[in-house]
Image (tube, rainbow, N blue to C red; front, side, top):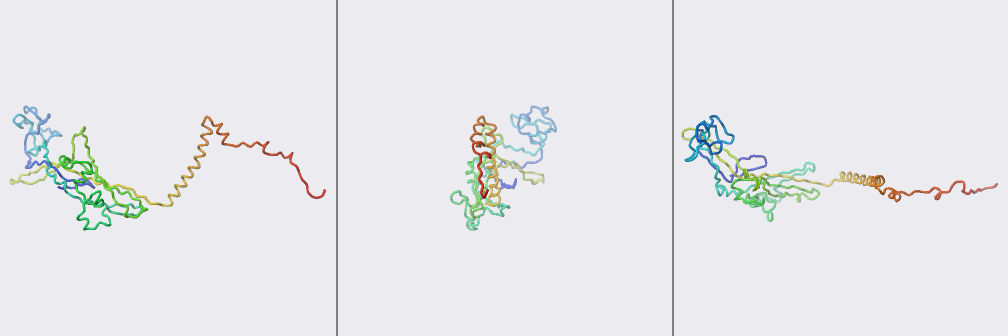
Length: 307
């Protein structure tokens, strides 16, 4: 059973329910707890509303069962009893439900658009295919049980209290190659907490009601506590394409950096290192003027012509 969309890019499949039919606005005993149990009317406060309760107390202590008394409340009665969850799940057959996922992506910078229903997929193939990582990796039709299995979970167990499964669509594309090489890659993972050491409020559920008037024209409702699996479709990716302009800019910046590197290294060696004097001797060549040059006074002169 597919319930109304709760968030964008998600869908919820109901797998288990607790029904409380025939609720009407009336008075009834509150569900037993440390706060609601009582011995007499003095233990109940008229007009008090417990945030964890089901209604407003009337101030009377009434019989809940043979051995337990609780404060009476004004509420939708009879109250919901969700202590026992149906096992196996009421709609465990939802494992065989299928879903067609349509996804369109675009990279505006490269003026590139594509969808996950690839060009080679025709209507005949689409009516008969089922996603399989080995045989049909391009098919956009998914069996719910297969997605849960790929996420490392057991559908029959997860269906009892519900959960959240992520459907990841990866569009990483190198647009230097042909468009046909840009195809989506699918993966699946459980997103909600599944920690045996912290199992408070496990799974995924919510409540909704169906309102109607009974044969006596009294406002009545059926309260539904719905357990199920929410599937979140998460799309991500990156595309790239060769461009000569940024390549030249990056190359120039790299060369400029490398030219500065030598100067910086020399400065560090000549100023900060202990062996800077030894390094300076090998780095620089000092010319001796007396040995390598001849003074003007010792130079011979020659004359040409007649005296």
